[in-house]
Image (cartoon, rainbow, N blue to C red; front, side, top):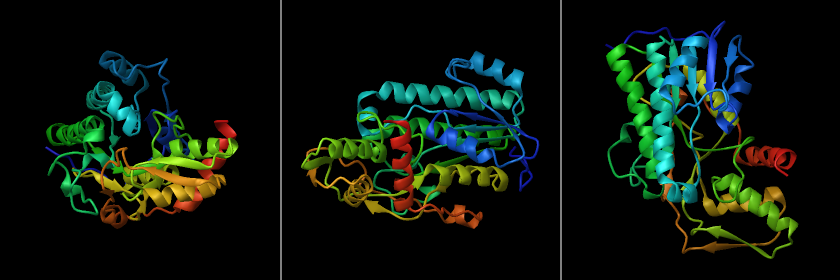
Amino acid sequence: MEGKFDVPFSLKGKKIWVTGHTGMVGSATARRLAEEDCELLTASHAELELRNQSAVNDWMSSHKPDVIVIAAATVGGILANSTRPAEFIYDNISIETNIIHAANENEVEKLLFLGSACIYPRETDQPMAEEALLTGSLEPTNEWYAIAKIAGIKMCEAYRRQYGCDFISAQPNNLYGPGDNFDLKSGHVVPALMARAHNAKLECKADLEIWGTGKVLREFLHVDDCADSLIHLIKHYSGLSPINIGTGEEVSTGELARMITETVSFQGDLIFDTSKPDGSPRKLLDVSRMQELGWKSSITLKDGLESTYEWYQANEL
């Protein structure tokens, strides 16, 4: 029953609800939407509990968004995923389920669900194409979050097939940038390492410990690039397949650590603790479909790290 939808899709005059608007991705998306002729809708956690289906239904019925971007999520790095698995799977499935279901009930014109590159099997071919979804076992260190994200992607597909909803999904690779979580225990690799390197500099430490071997490869996407890609997708894509968002370039975690220490001007040595987990050996997305849709990332990792550190110094210290 998949419907036929207008592409390009016009945002002019639309009411667009960005969920999770205070988070890194949500706030970047809100900034990007300021360039469009549309009305931005937001709801704080105090105003709306996204894990409550009835509350989400009532809010949506009252505010009548035309477009929804699901950027709200419970997120974190390896440590957070390992120690809070129940939160990661329950919170994320609850949030996405409630919003997607209510969006259909309230005849929302378009919805974009934000997935994650961790949806792909740990040992899949690189770069990871969209077809690799559900072809193998997940990375154990973040499978709870990955399963929740896969559920959201499949919900968009199911509602599209059964009800003809213009619901799409996309998965970016490792995100970083202004508004990131710089907590040493729950943050992802870029912000947590940046905060640790900054502290080590201030404390004049001789070295900095890095988890893992430093040899695994990762792709990093600046959140402002991500936000721009999401708006591009809303305008120019309507289909069943989730779409990869990334730079198409990768760097070792060791090289990333060296780039971060250079960015914050930490002069000490890097000590790699090989007793700590590395996570997936490699995570590079095949971004050919996104490029075919006319979008390509523009912020280099070097420039992105510098702007992120500037934001950290201005907002987190």
